[in-house]
Amino acid sequence: MPNVTMNDVATELGVSRASVSYALNGCARERGVGRQLEKRILHAAQEMGYRPSRLAQSLVRKRSNTIGLVLPDMSASYGPTLTESLETAARASGYQVLLSHHGNDLDRFRETIQTMLGWQVDGLVIVPMAGRDLPEVIKITESLPVPTTMVERDIGAAQSHLITCDAEVAMRMSIEHLLKLGHRRIGLIDGARELIESQVREDSYRATLRRAGIEFDPALLLAPSLTDTPQQEAAFIDQLLDMPERPTAVIAISGTRAISIYRACLKRGLTIPDDLSVVAITGTTFDDFSKVQFTSARLTYGEVGKAAFELLKNDIENGRTPPRRILTSPQWVAGQSTAVLRDK
Image (tube, rainbow, N blue to C red; front, side, top):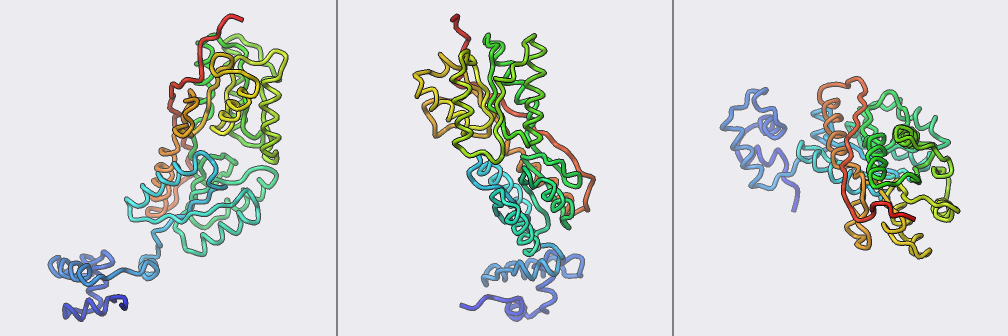
């Protein structure tokens, strides 16, 4: 069955194609089409099964009502929540979301951005790459011709908005919770040392311990590199748990690391939280990991996605604004993975 066109709707009603176009493109009042005629056109178009061409509409409006979301991959714990919240906010405002992944590869990152721009997206939400290619990544993002919001990773791009969860607050909440339980030897499995948010967490870790009168022990702070393999990251956990005087509590940066700590404890006959208290700083809910409901500083990626869209929408519809830095507050979730330190 052929697609119904504006000409078909105009012929059916005996009106001009221009009137149909104005009504279907939302500018009837501006073009002198009366309210009753507009209603007739919209009703007829619906009854006849007219489906507007997004490409044609974008040419008329000079906007595609489409934004691009670029993630490293979908294995990250924040991916589904961030994507769903962004899509929900976008759909409520009449926008669509194109999703792609750069796989932490510079050539693919560049290609993904260019592909998005080729689809005439009105704006971009990007979880950027980091690591040795960071200068080139910043160069690419600084020259983008559409409004852009960075999320999750702070790469220091001065021309883009940044929305991320407050790493400093999440770390402080986690350590203060463990201190109240009597723990003083607290380990940290941090994120990659190249990331700015990892540096923020380390500063918060050191400062919170210092305020509690605890001397910083560099052996308790372990941070992989972006180039480390999963096996190398697992070795960090082994290193921490096999210390002659192991920590009584560990903070894990990600749900994946928290679960890896649980499995490493199983191999050693250690139980959580009796032998080791664990706090996870993550967006993971652990609903599918019933063995341990981790105590966590829950990173609110639903808020990040919604805020990212609102910033982008404002810049798209009203003109670009000076870059803003927005930090969302983590939520504390009491789980079963921490306990009062027992006398040894």
